[in-house]
Image 1 (cartoon, rainbow over the protein chains, first blue to last red):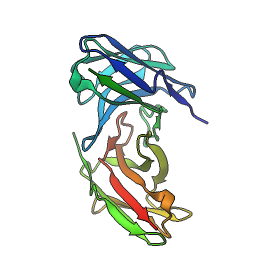
Image 2 (image 1 turned 135 degrees about the vertical axis):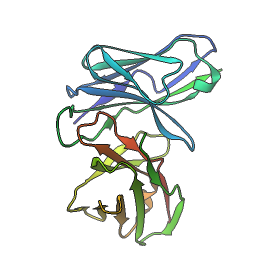
Image 3 (image 1 turned 90 degrees about the vertical axis):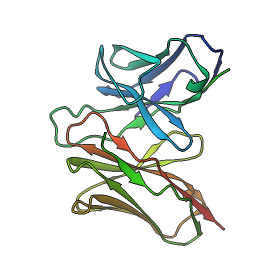
Image 4 (image 1 turned 180 degrees about the horizontal axis):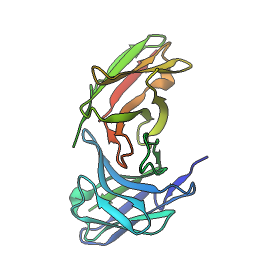
Amino acid sequence: DVKVTQSSRYLVKRTGEKVFLECVQDMDHENMFWYRQDPGLGLRLIYFSYDVKMKEKGDIPEGYSVSREKKERFSLILESASTNQTSMYLCASTKGSRGRYRSYEQYFGPGTRLTVT
Amino acid sequence: RKEVEQDPGPFNVPEGATVAFNCTYSNSASQSFFWYRQDCRKEPKLLMSVYSSGNEDGRFTAQLNRASQYISLLIRDSKLSDSATYLCVASSGGSYIPTFGRGTSLIVHP
């Protein structure tokens, strides 16, 4: 069974704090993703990584950075948290599909509900 | 970026009903398609992949129409436990990034 875990289910931080969200997967997946999900807006991609130390911006990277030092771990960093970053953050992983015809299904972590006050 | 469109609903149906959702995608290069289910305040989980020949899993049937660029999900004999949001996903061949629809809400009532 694929398992994607996230460091916290609920997190409350103050405006201006630096926030680290950790994600670990145990299936040797090449690709990892960070999304945020807000009511009415669906899943929005923040960053993704297709290999160790590789990262690419998604649709809404502003105010975020990421780190992937090991294949199994993908961290999302909020450099200076703001109230508009209050959201549900979801990590996902998938097998690599580079050069292949098909893409593979994503496996999600349980999510971190972050509140910035 | 290319879009995936879904009717947000909610679809409100009685137990035992048959309900169908459609989802349209704009990227004609899309090759891989999926339906995910997301319960309230939980993560999305894969419900089923959608193959060119269609796919059936118990009460759930998924179909792909490439000519009209849509995929569908049919749920027969709805159960209360089917109440959830259903997300449609399309990926172009070999792409790292799938495109998610915003989801269709289903409420099954007694």
